[in-house]
Amino acid sequence: MESVLQEQPAIYCATAPEDSTPVSEEVSRMAHEAVKNFHECFWWWNAEAPITTRADVRAVVESLRESGGHRAWWTAQAIHKCL
Image 1 (cartoon, one colour):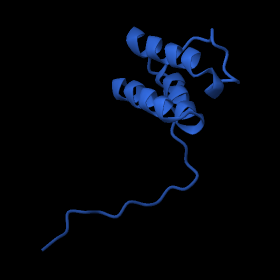
Image 2: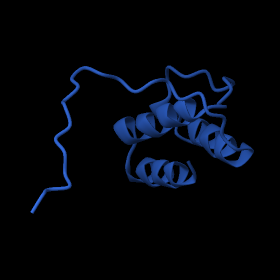
Image 3: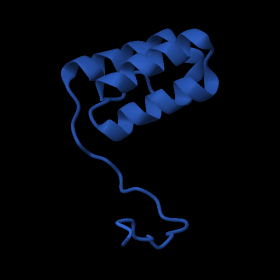
Image 4: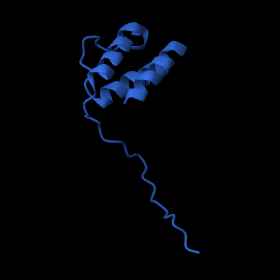
């Protein structure tokens, strides 16, 4: 019996391209609220900076997960679900 699976070559040190896909107003608003509510996670982030792309939202989610507590994780999960 022939296998349907094919071995894929491994690609090391490859990064995903920057995702400049625009996000909805709701997702942008949620990300802005998270930046303001969890300012300790975003000491490096300008609170007035526009959050307009999926890459921007992913940066917010990543920072919430790395630097925040349980509430930040829950917020990150809610934002990520909307992507």
